[in-house]
Amino acid sequence: MSEKYILELENITKTFPGVKALDNIQLKVRKGTIHALMGENGAGKSTLMKIIFGIYTPDQGRIKYKGQEIKITGSKDALSRGISMIHQELSPVPQMTVAENIFLGREAITAFGWVDNKKMVEDTQKLFESLKIEIDPKAKMIDLSIASTQIVEIATAISYNADLIIMDEPTSAITDKEVEHLFDIIESLKAKGVSIIYISHKMDEIFRICDEITIFRDGQYVGTKSANELDQESLIQMMVGREIKQVFHKDKAEIGEVVLSVTNMSRKGKFSDISFEVRKGEILGISGLMGAGRTEVIESIFGIHPPDSGEIQINGSKVKIRSPRDAIKHKIGLLTEDRKLTGAFLPISIRDNMIISSIDNFLYKSGFIKGKLVDEMCSMFVERLSIKTPGLNQLIMNLSGGNQQKVLLARWLLNNPDILILDEPTRGVDVGAKSEIHKLMSRLAQTGKAIIMISSELPEVLGMSDRVVVMHEGFKKGELSRDEANQEKIMEMAYS
Ligand SMILES: Nc1ncnc2c1ncn2[C@@H]1O[C@H](COP(=O)(O)OP(=O)(O)OP(=O)(O)O)[C@@H](O)[C@H]1O
Ligand SMILES: [Mg+2]
Image 1 (tube, helix red, strand yellow):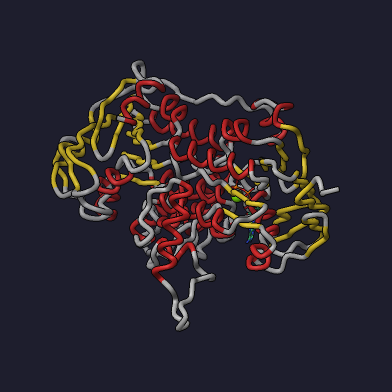
Image 2: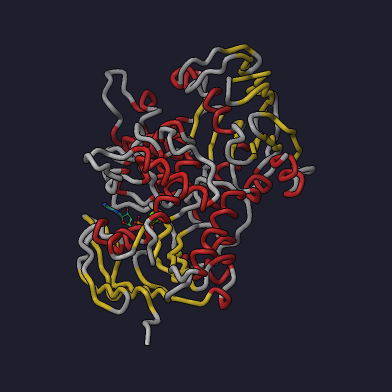
């Protein structure tokens, strides 16, 4: 008789300095099923996935794969056994092409022993055709958007023809349309008997595609249930051990005069003729599909890529923003969608990461740092945003993905800008922390800040915005007030 389970993990423990990431946990994945792994930020999900994929060695515990107890010695070993992984943190080699990235470490070789670029491009083309992906195999990774990068990562994991695919937050950077596409791919993999471990903080995804759900809390195993035994509320209850309602905290704020206005702004090949304004106390949502140009627009406002034409006014005066430094001088803050750009992967402490943009506020006249004040402020944000860390000295690269996001948000809260631009502020953040972030945004608006929020989650856009700008392929398609906006209207504008 064939084995019921493809993977059985027992009594796995993994400790990092100061952190017990996994404490005697178990996980059993049935063959040909989609198994969700759920838990708050820092619960230990990615750590366990890295153990299965051979990146970490557990301190103790047993791994049974296809009925046999095994030791996984590294990623190569995992791949050769038929286990592949979509990583939570995307790490392409930026200067290489898409095809080179996909075949990294298993390059096609010509009869003369050279790397066979032509064949790799052809194979990538075939792979993309079979998955209905429209990305140029010869494009450099550095030129791709973060969404396309994630799609390449997904395709790479699938190209190994694995029996077990780990998907650690595969949809964090892609929008609804691509999510649907991924789900089609997942269904067809399942039909072929492939097993999938699926991690996501998006509840609706979990209930749509998963057969079983295992829940971790603080590195411990809470339980495994069949998906139809659970609903959102009971799942959240198991994850956080208390009740959280998934509502959006939107308090009424007084909306004042225009703080930022953008008129006829264009950047060649990215967006054209964009105009909008944001007022004091207002949360402006920007909605649209992948490639709509939302991130590009705010990158221009923040001086990362200045626009070719158009005008930006702050408090009624025309300004020229040539660099992020200029933007910060004008009291603009930007939380980027790409954590890597903001330094989340550097060996820098949480403390330094938080104060890096507001260091001037923490200096004595003599130039010395007000150490105590820094620690007080940073600790306050650690607590308020429930950042899971043994201390302020922890390196940000050692935090779980969602907790890195919270540290970067704290950086901008400490900087206290007048105009706060948030690009996907709750990406990869768990339900509890998400509602904390929403509360904070709401409170900031009440204190007179102007907030621009890009979000690919429609409920978040609808729940938090006073007004919504919808973009499509580099153009502004329309603007809706909070009362006018609904899912259908936004979708209609975003798609055509
Ligand atoms: N290399 C490391 N060094 C030190 N601590 C680590 C390291 N990797 C993970 N941790 C810690 O282990 C714990 C579990 O982290 P993990 O990344 O597994 O969480 P997660 O469940 O994937 O969270 P998220 O939903 O935010 O991705 C966290 O407290 C994290 O800070
Ligand atoms: Mg993780």
